[in-house]
Length: 161
Image (cartoon, rainbow, N blue to C red; front, side, top):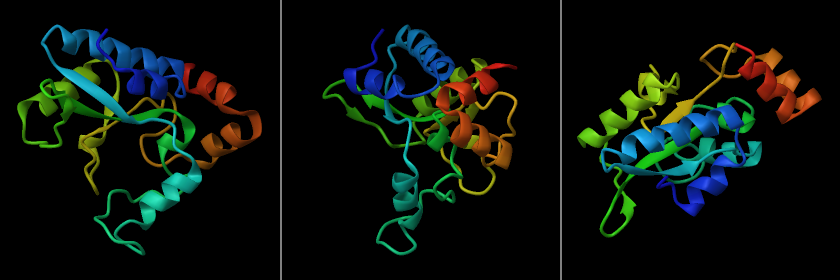
């Protein structure tokens, strides 16, 4: 496995089923000499609101249409990935590079939903596994389970499909 310590630490905070899919993605892509980093995993509502403010009330480009509670990252069922150039190791954010398409194809083959399929604001680094819950923003049922019963109970619901 070629996932670095940063990626491994971030995967420890998300749904184990999603973490396993990302680890399997790593195994497949490593055989093709493609490495990636998990740049985001579980995100607090405060962190989500700060990202939402970007390009709206604080400088920068708009990177999300989701406020706190409206992103699957807030529930530990989404991650963001970036391919890594090997020498020196650094992120390759050029989404026109073919490695991005390969990464997306492998993620989809493992049952993950890719943010590259978003219709409004495409999010190439984003992969999610929401199980029986709809692809769009977390619905009120998902929010209630997570808030009232906790992450483990919510993840069991996601994995029940």
